[in-house]
Amino acid sequence: MKIMRSESLRKIFAPATIAAIVGFLIGIATPIRKTFIGDSAPLHVIYSAAELIGNAGIPSITLIVGANLLK
Image (cartoon, rainbow, N blue to C red; front, side, top):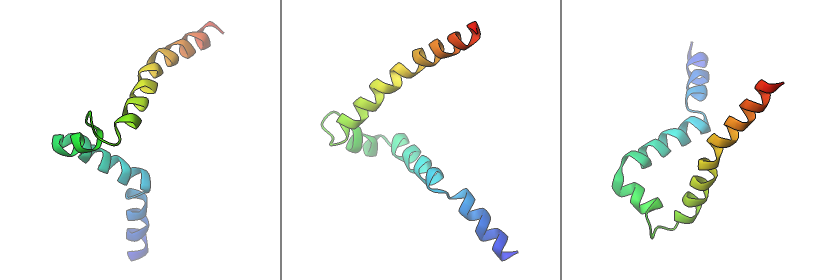
């Protein structure tokens, strides 16, 4: 029983899950968010690059889905 508990905890707290929780906490707390990705913050360059790529994602996916529907 104890082995199954530790195994299920490992699955629940996988690195991707922990990163999502930390990202959610940083995003929801405005002072922390401004510290990391504000206008003069050190990670602003990375954030703006990710935002630029993310903004191009939806139109790209729409084109791919449309091309697949034509087949």
